[in-house]
Image: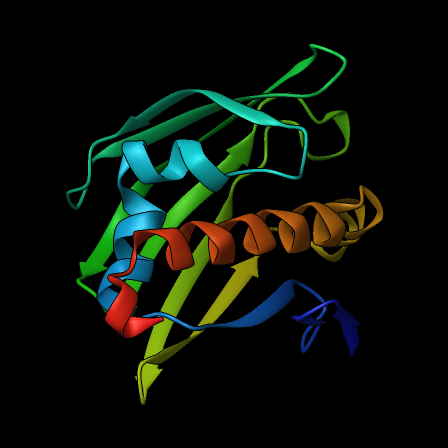
Length: 167
């Protein structure tokens, strides 16, 4: 088990990566930040990265597509389809990185569960890869550090979005 800042990353099976983070916000707001382009553009990606294209068709069978620009102006294209939507508790979708040679042509299954207690939300994201080799390539890409920084940015966005009485 690794703890990157406040992000906990585990590999419970040879194909899964489980990432857990607690946010000081209600799950309705966390769900919105995961699915609404206006909010996604404020936090998605590591520090210094920008979500320059964000398409979300939030319905079962609907697609999503993100283009993330790095500080060096290179871009990464991510895409997938929504398989299950249980607002605001659970989101299941596929995910593919079109630009990473190590995982080219593969699609993972991403299950995100939001559990709220006393106004704090625990986000648990389980990503299942087609093979151990592809899971390990994702881990070796520095993904967990990028996710940790993105979740730090998400935490900042959530604080800014809440009424003063909730903070």
